[in-house]
Length: 440
Image (cartoon, rainbow, N blue to C red; front, side, top):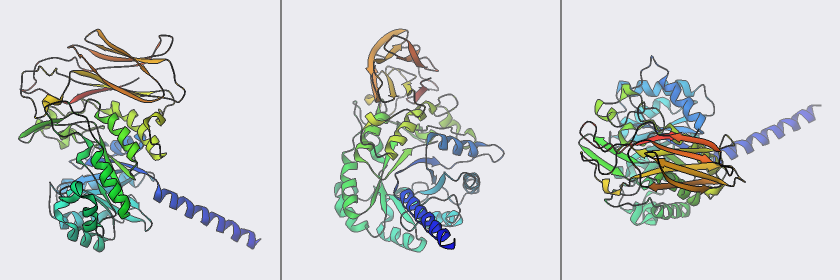
């Protein structure tokens, strides 16, 4: 009898070891989370975590620009307290060196939570994960000292190092002992341009190849748009079909990690979840208010991407809707490019277009997307299984709408814009943020 029990225990332990190894080596998807003021009397922190779990994220990367501030510590505490009740979801720190360049201050906050059950651990030694926003100028020696002193799995964003893109092999020759992997941030969008331009994965491919050769992990950024109109500057980086284009690129390059930029960065307009007003300035709320300009319509597309990424799919044709029926969204700017107010740098890259993406299950056929703008038919385009997307030129003033139509002409689902397109500025500037509506 005891022999049988011991055998069973041995099998269970072996199975547990296999499961642990599988989890360690699995692909993970994170959402960059801007740590701001979150009112502890609300359930906002709970809503963020529950929402991220529903999309399929594994963890929040907590961007902390002011690690010594009481409000930052308070928000981080709320997030860890609630994440501790959600075994499938974790948190880790992304030190923001633009906000605070002193690594010792970031280290002090990290030390308070590194042993928390909700802190993400990774790798064969199951070490707490640390990342960063910027940090290349800190240098490999400082990072190596931090890594050694804190025994972490380190995936910083060291793009500021001159070799990172120009000589990736040389970069890893200098940084190899300091990092376990690297995170490219700026490749998530095309460069600022005054002519239409598409996002590229050329730099990602070069850094990923060098990382592979050095035995290091690679993390790519997935994002929709970058638009900012605050803090003394205003710029736009094209977002017409940036999100689905980037999905294609990430599946093709197949990094170990993907980080969605971001869950809640209202200031740069690439949020996909709620951006709580108590943590935002009135200036940012003029153009990045998630209550009036929601982006949650993108979440079903990202859920489909996460599913394909974790399955190791290399092509968007393998993406499937998580509800088994369809996923998709419509997005557009609320003003035409002829808007006569203050425009951002890079405005020349924008097009007057209605943008959409749709994911259909395997075997789907005979479907089309009907795009109407200002009451006029812009396009009727065939769509099939997997991810299909387009930026349809000719957007008019007025209402915007897409419809998913089956082979018999029946409308299966639709998405209607919440705001009519106009030509006039609001608050003295032309808002280049996107209105997003999910397919329903």
